[in-house]
Every structure is written in C-alpha cells, then in structure tokens.
Image 1: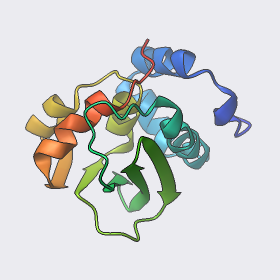
Image 2: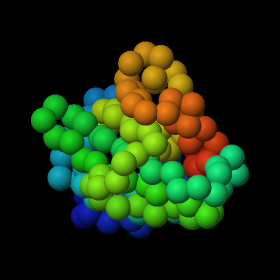
Image 3: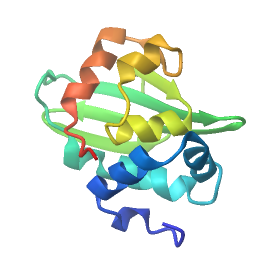
Length: 145
C-alpha cells in the first residue's frame, strides 16, 4: 500500500490488517499519503460486496463523510435495482448521511466494528433516516478477518 496500490490488496487480508492494527496505526494511515488510495479502494469495491437483500428497488442515496481534523473526504453511494454506484462527492439529496473518523470507517468497512455501537458511543454520526442507516450493514457482505 505504500506505493498507492491499495486496490491490489485482498479484502480479507486488509480486514485482518485493520483488525490487528492499533488505533494509532490506523490514525497514521488515515493521516498519510495513502489515505486517498485506501478510501478509493474501499469505495471502489463497494459494488462487489453489495447485496440488495433488505433493500427496496427504490433509489436510495447514502452520503459518507470521512472526517479527520480539517480533512473530510465525501463519497456517495446510490443503491437502486440491485446495484451500488459510488461517486466521489455528494451531489444528490441523501436518505441518510454517515460521518465518522477515518479510523472508525476502516473498522466498519472491514467488519471490525459494529456501526450501531459506534453510533451509540457517538463515534458515528447519522443524519436522515437512522433506521435505513442500521439496515446498511445487512446490505453489504463485507469480508472479515
């Protein structure tokens, strides 16, 4: 990943790396030059792990805000007709928006943290439809460590 080839890392291996890393190690990654390639790799693979189980056929837009200090990276997922489309930025109205630190996002994206627990401990902020936000976990079959 030091070379910016985060897309080449096997998702299960990445999940194990996140699971065994300390919070400080994850924070270092998210404050380094590999932050963008890591986020792009995760969001780039979301469609692979999307399962429309539990989703309606209606167009559902989710905003993701990964915020660390003064740095915020925003992505948008559109779930519709069994597909997940990801774009950088947030140009549509969202049914729900999720805001969390990069360290917590890495844990959620690798199935190493429970989003409900993060929400209850205020490490994850949800705006919009909270019920739909909790259902997102079931809509993605995330490889785990």
